[in-house]
Image (tube, rainbow, N blue to C red; front, side, top):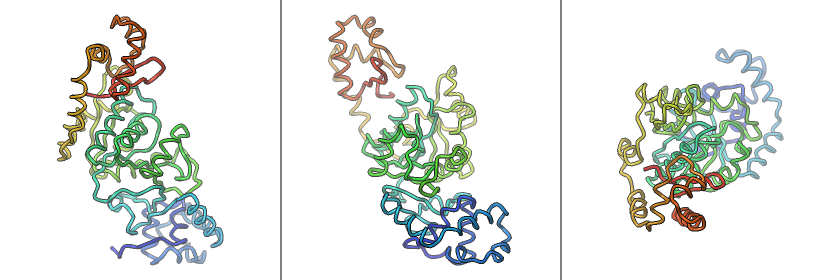
Length: 371
């Protein structure tokens, strides 16, 4: 392996942005030619003589070569304006974990700060259309991993992905989102707040160049990067044919451990996770157990949370005991507790301030913990 690069140039930026070329062939071509500039300046007849390239890939290179050096300078200026950087293969900032996967990306465009290469990392993935239970568990997992100084890697998608990353940020930890579009595009748009926080307090990365739209074909391929950046993949909720299982397949190819959160057998959203457990995946029971499996000791946040609940007043304990991870509406809680409605609302407000109860919809409440 050659010496690490300190920075990238406009020709490496150009090579990184050729969508028709897979990462492994970009790396091969740069190693073959010595530098990306030689491919950019290569005559057409010489390009035809490179045996590993398909006709589709050659056509992609020809199309990319239509960009002038002035065009490339403008694109680089746009990146600087948007705070977009690029970590190129064998550059110092390029993530070491990705150097060892099949078809690594040649370059990673990113906003924010790439994580420390020595930091442990867990991918938390799952269904977009998840249950309140799954969303709550994912958020708590994100917080628990943050407390243990473990990087949370996910796809910034709606549902489980976003919940886990929000939990990590809430817990003061670090998290990285791998996008299926350019890092200058927020997708899904509903996760705008999460996207902005990742760009300042975490990191968003993509192998696709700026202005790339979120095409469906991009997302399965980005999953190899999600698993590749992690030590372990944890699936919270997934149907039998879920896209999250693509991440699992990549992780297995990469020799990573798989864990799954068990769910009710009657829930379609748990079909994929329960099947993974049947096939030999590790079972996620609680954060302490999970961290022990990674040879990491849990911090005391969970114990302090338990002490907080032990100190609840009688009314607070009564209301708390009526809740679990399935949403309960105000009317059913009123009927079960027998409390005055005003006192019930006040007590729920106190429990929310303590961070152990959440209002997931208007007048629907759940516990905010998972033990």
